[in-house]
Image (tube, rainbow, N blue to C red; front, side, top):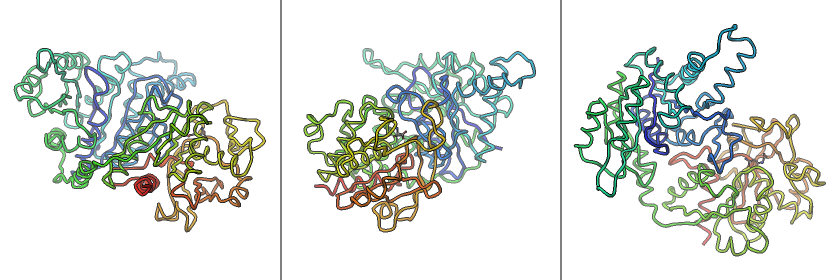
Length: 531
Ligand code: GLN
């Protein structure tokens, strides 16, 4: 039977519950346990797939095509396990399941209520993670902050899980802010006390409190938290702000959090080995020299919209002991008149994914700039589509070249909908998740992956129109990756260029510390070499 750890947040959001949970996951995994993670989000959207990236941040995609919260990306990068659709549940997804069941008469005429029907469904999803993953430990993060109206059914459900599974099998970790008051020069424990009081009123006594602070604190404060929050002082863990999220597993290792958890849950663990993480952190420390990457996107107001792209670049940079400096260029405002000044001195240009018409012409200009000025280029999804459209317009002379996403009536449909997809139904109808690309022998893609195949994750609707392949090839573009079963273009590249490669899939979802995705690694290397 699996053991369960539930992570809740107190006082304010944005404290890094996800990083805390993932870091604990790293410790437990490297103590010999099989770890799986889950996130419950209290919002009513079915999934983040249709949410605005500027508001919500990136949509992370799992191997089985789940469109999830960006925290899942942190989980996967940290614990290095593939998660799945059972890892990501919004209140909307749970409620919609309950309401569909009700419409079908599945509740046999009973009054459908938050307790027990919604809470039962939440518990079912928690137990399903155990069944699917066969993990020793399931770490589940409850989004939001304790006390929010929306998160109450989740808190009630995890209270019931503890009752059903017993104290030795379930653990509650509360991550809460310990604020520092500059005026009086002291830390204040009162907000934590209040948030624990709130939890107690919901029937939950936290087993561990992770106090999120600006810096380390005196033991006297830990005793105060221990006394007022009714937990042993050993279980008050202080986690100060860190200059890199990847340092947190090392910080928590020092607190022996994994041992506290193992003791509470009666788990036999092996000696913790974190050599890989220690080396990775050493690489980060040694990454002093900066290199610039220009990212031409349309959601640049919120860098979280490109979180996995940024982490993938950083990780690739650390491999070469370089620190990546992001230069954000808003494609909505990029035009013929300002492109030279906006991209002046660019050593590498990355065009990430995106949806809709806005900013597309700016991205096409950026792809043209990179191609014609021999600047390393990495195009991702829409970034691959604009590279092809640019090539069609300016090399093949197809002036109307476009994707039917943006111009449905163009005479040069370079990208078009696959059969069976429609434009109206936008939720959950993309080509999602993992597919295999066969890589052309001798191509750049093949060299970078050092393999004849690449298995990567997708999230798009429009596909390259194969009617144009010959014309593109005759003029120098190489189609180096294809999903053979459906004959879909996955990777394009241009030889006789410092580095020009673009993929229909999203390579950013598979970069892991010490294991950067090959496209990112190649791109960063090309920037370093582009003196
Ligand atoms: N909008 C494009 C499509 O749906 C690209 C999607 C993306 O960049 N993720 O095909």
